[in-house]
Length: 422
Image 1 (cartoon, rainbow, N blue to C red):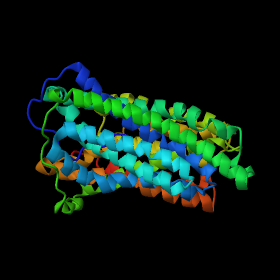
Image 2: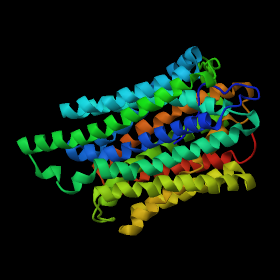
Image 3: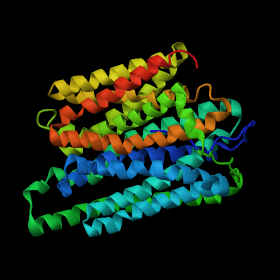
Image 4: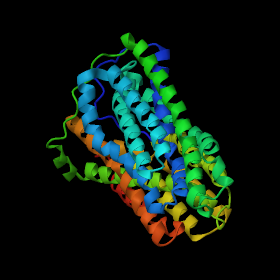
């Protein structure tokens, strides 16, 4: 999932930089995409270990995506003061701290400590995104900045495709052997300690990698732009929400991120149901690659379609397609229900960038303020999954799919309303 930068890219022709440095910045997109998708593996693990309801399990996404809402604006001001380099190193450092917090969280056996670790990790990712998005646009000529951003975001999708299968092997493997619901007392406590340690060890490895990447950027600091543009100030800019195109875009980003995250979060439990595929949670975790991989493939297909047809019409079509697939999955059972829901990833592919571009279309010098508002709307990934979890607890996972289906239908309405240029 890519997100817009709050700090705008600098004007001008850009700075010519070596390919190795561009590749290093692109690698950041891969890293934060992969770490974000690992939440979909953590949810069934923590749900089983702590015997959580679906609502409680979705608090993992709430803790993670609330960081976007809380940290985005301070991060923008921070990058404006310290520059891209220090911002990237600081973001990687905060991410590493968040990963290391999984170690005491594992030892505590308290669910809330995992939520705190996820929030700190996401705060670091937010800082990293605010610095890396405009930086990649400046590492070369302005004429090719769009292709660099598209290339970098493709690697973001690659991370979301690769990390879940690896995470499912490392983190979910043992859940197929023991059902925590069958344990109690000392046996349950011992099992929780042993299994949460698996999470801690995995994130120690990730923290070490992040530290090495931070050292690489510090070593190449002389090749990076030292300063950033002034941060976007949202004071007074909320009045822009009165513009139908931008206001609808903010609502649509909120709905899209919420629907995408909610489906990804419930997929492992959904596919593991006997009435759907009846696979182990480890196998279901590996199948998340089809959901996120579909989004990666769909970006290439969508890039061609957007050259031929109105972006608003394309958005309306794929959003309707996503709603139909979700409702079909909710109404049937067996493997077809599982594959139908996985196919929603293909429909998700072009939604975020298309909604974003439609939202800022025609804003002129108000584009940075509009971008900041759209970025804050990513908080939908914190709130909508909670609603889906609550409905799943009250009814069933299949019934709870009605919420993302409604989200997609509302996005389709926005796309159709924005089918003409602003």
